[in-house]
Amino acid sequence: MSLKFQYSGFCDRIIMDKIVILDFGGQYCHLISRRIRDFGVRAEVMPFNTSAKSLLADKSIKGIILSGGARSVYEKDTPRFDKEIFNLSIPVLGICYGHQLIAHLMHGKVVSGKSGEYGLMKLNIKNGGEILAHLGKSKNVWMNHRDVVVQLPKSFVSVASTEHSKIAAFANKKLKIFGVQFHPEVSHTENGDRILRKFVIDICKCKKLWISTIVAQNLIKETRDVIGNEKAIIGLSGGVDSSVATALVGKAIGKKLVAVYVDTGLMRDGETKFIESAFRKKKLNLKIIRAEKQFFHALKEVSSPEQKRKIIGKLFADIFYAIAKKELATFLIQGTIYSDRIESGLTKHSSKIKSHHNVGGLPKNLQMKLYEPLKDLYKDEVRKIASELGLPKKITTRQVFPGPGLAVRIIGEITPERVKIVRQAGKIIEEELRKTELWKDIWMSFAVLLPIKSVGIQGDKRSYKYPVVVRIVESRDAMTANFSKIPFSILEKISTRITNEIHKVNRVVYDITNKPPATMEWE
Image 1: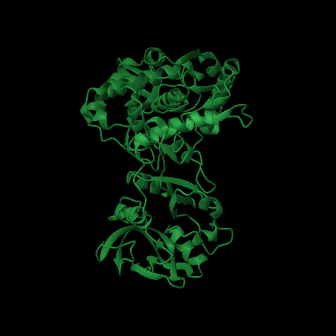
Image 2: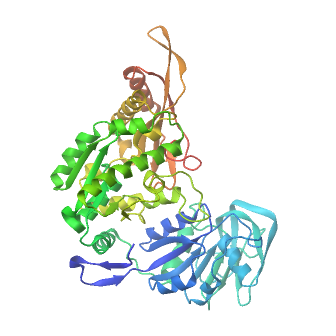
């Protein structure tokens, strides 16, 4: 994303301050970014080996955070950053592995501790050292390590300790380099946000400019700069991400954008009619492609979730490319957001959870220029942008729907019968929840069809039919989620309707798994 932002008329430009997080593969890396953005400051995750030269060239960078990681700094071939970063006169904060790596690379000493520290630990604060200033004498902090710093680099001072780690935080106020062994980004750490805010706002002197109005204006301007006078094509699914991407690019280049809705046969109930009624009024160059037969044929006898996603992604790309060629479009626009890229393995040491069809499904020889205007935004940020663009609430408040559609809500092979079952069950779930006050707090609610059958009794006869899983979760940004504590009376209504109205189902179960350890979807 461009770092220059414009206000109305796009005349006056300002530079948006930014904090860079170097990713060493820690499970909380992107949570750091999330926390910083909540302060109103832009944060961007970059690979751990990003060069000091490239960081110095970006004048918007006001601070660097080194994330946690699973390795030991004294082992061979462990991920390390460019030591020249210490000479950039940019404040640095190391967290967990990052804390140890600073000490190790600046000639301190890190060893394996006699006892690990996992979970909540009492942190004894000595003098605060600026980074922990005004926090009192002790705090409960979240630890997740065994290695410890036992000897500090020259001119560094220890500012906090725990029972098993005498150097649980250190500081060099002159160089503005700090380290904390614990995780301030995790909600369990007392005043963790305050510590991060101290670094970002007070030490790095970042201005709070990461707000939806400026971000939206920047994205429109960036789109104009990137696409220019060329034509572009976008896949419009009707979900928040693709709708916002369509609105942004449409504002930037007008009818040079071709919006393509592909009816894969794997969509929500009544989705195609809704798209026609909602977007025809927007004066878009909208094309509706009915490709149900193509998708079912391509997915025949395919059970692997990764294979499903890649097949769907490739078929989408093929359809887009055929239309793009006809329309003479040179850009492919996608509504990829940050969490999509994270789960698909954003950096070298990030764990790949699953391929998103708009991340991992595109062919390597894609004969178009790819542009993803939302790639650095989290879901809640996209919703705020939607409001800035004046999109109707019926679209901006829609529940999240996966790019591959119902294909990833059917475990095993995709068939028209199974799609019909899971679509109808999902409709029932949504209808019952919309009647309640719970609806506004629900992130996603849907059905999952399992490939097995179980014995039941219906109409005084033995039945042998499919079970349906009900999945209802609450989340803020899709990075983490909790299953919704839905009252049993509502779940009973849902279960009764599903088993009564869907002939092929005789059992309903409720998924009570959070993310992590699960993901939102089952596939």
